[in-house]
Length: 256
Image (cartoon, rainbow, N blue to C red):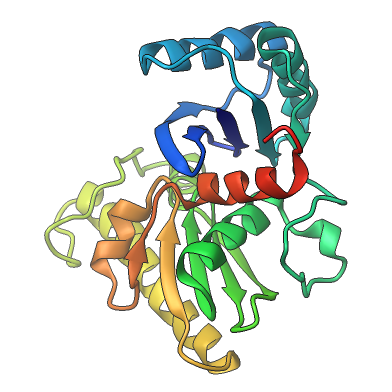
């Protein structure tokens, strides 16, 4: 079995593959100060709760939180007896990266692009709703073209609460109408429908700069909230990053 771990700024996403089949998946809150002796038991508990064997053949990690890279590597060796592959410069992806310099692209963005290309082909536009909302493009040849990074929804809500003295912290829920009649629904309308407008505007601009008719794929923890409200998202695939990690494991881990 393959254990795939994607460490984001907000969530740590875990998947277990038996060959090409995703047997289990889950999300945990990212703790930047977590140690190997906290991460290892957490991952073993995840397997136990899913009634899966504690032994894994390989472990692949995508991490955008540098403080957690070493603890995860240590946890993999101590608790699973494997040397993990950490996605980064030198990782074989099968994808040409048109970015300057290529190593500056977040590992999660490339991993997700690899998964989307394999499952849907190109051209494609990928929208990842996480701590940041990222927009990435793949052309028909399978090249990664670059994209854009914007503040995520929770970041926007937290910024309003932190910098506007009279605004409360609100839940990320879509109100019934864009015309909010309370402070809470006004904030929800601004954040949620503002994000919808951002998505539709960005997709239109990216399509204008790309050849062909790109498929638009939404992923990330908040994809199910925003994507159904738009007119431009073709697919919602919340776990596509895990598929990208599996494909990278196949190319880089002989034991798998």
